[in-house]
Amino acid sequence: MSAEERRAPVRWYRSPVPQDELKSLFQRNDWQAAFQTLGYLGLLAFTGGATIYSSTHWPWYATLAILFTHGTFFAFQINAVHELGHNTVFRSRAVNQFFMRVFSFLGWINPDLFFASHQRHHHSTLHPPDDLEVVLPMDVSFRGWFKWIIVNLKGPYYSAMSHLKIARGKFEGDWTLFLFPPDEPEKRIPARRWAAAVLAGHALILVVSVLTRQWMVPLVVTFAPFYGSWLHVLCNETQHIGMQDNVTDFRLCCRTFEPNALVRFLYWHMNYHTEHHMYVGVPCYKLRRLHKLIEHDLPPTPKGILSTWRLIRSILAQQRADPEFQYIPQLPSVLHAGESTAGL
Image (cartoon, rainbow, N blue to C red; front, side, top):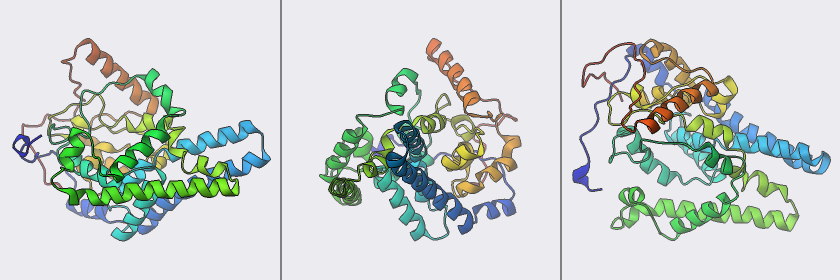
């Protein structure tokens, strides 16, 4: 992909928000940030600790149930990295970056690779070739998902090999090579260093665990991203699947849905995905408030994960029958071509 192929910046429509309300929404609150960040980290510590305790005190089936619950909660690491990496959670950039690195390590995530792509995703959402982080049309195979959302047996190997390649400077894939071109090796240095640090850190955990015979510790730390991801998949895959590309309205290319409070917390409130794209500077814990302010200007919001996936399955069924089919959410008003409001 050459620079000549890229388009002019997209002039996005954003649902209008009064300036005083918008200013208030942009204000970060360290108490709410701590509740979200330390609360999530504490939840993982609790389920991980309970798993280790159960392994020596309770029946194996109780340990297995707690371990799977731990994996279910652990799978949302990428959402923690995503929010903290936007530097909108805590007031301090340094604090955001510190916890972003903590969750990146736990989740085997390379934030330098992720945000190089994700910044373009926000700038040119679903406008290829400027955004290739998400490419439509997307399809799903629930049978295929089932093979790895319960236990992803190949996950540890592939993650380790991926980090090893990056640490050695081997960047692969057209999109990755566009973001990190071979003739700009200095851009690759942070990603390479992080990949090496993740490998070294998890190797140390494994060695210490073997020497101390703490067999459960690697299961609740190093291998935790590779089991129990069913809930995360059901949440995260809703963001753009079945929507439209090459449009200038986030209401047409992003999806918002309303799960219960626990899922919102685990998902770092990314169920309000349309709102997040409209006003990326709003902290995740204020997105529900933003949703209420602009709900009148949004398509109907599905309630719950099951109703959301019923809608998605019906869209995908129509797309399989008619590859030209484009789902158009019901908007409260008809927009003129190119209409836009002041945004970020």
